Length: 110
Image 1 (cartoon, rainbow, N blue to C red):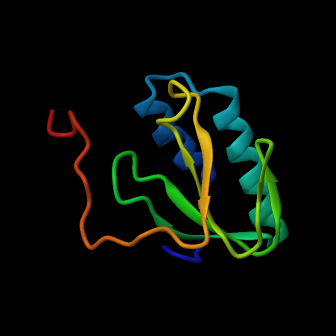
Image 2 (image 1 turned 45 degrees about the vertical axis):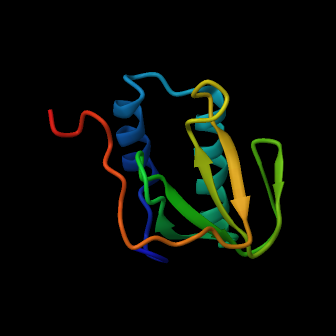
């Protein structure tokens, strides 16, 4: 739920399943840094990415350093697991585009 309590441990477990049990050090670092930022009140979850793997999207309340990337205050940010050969990367924008639909994940109907 946007702005609601976030259970990053549950999100990490879901991502871990999608990555077949192996998360990159960068992914773990992002999750740790984002959890700390939310606990300090420096960020909040606002929505989910509209395509697989439906990653959470956060809004920064102040400038943050996430996995070596400076994200400006009041930007939206998410971890793009598809970058860097699935090691992932920070992606941010003043506001990401919005969609009224979801993209299905390959293999979800198995």
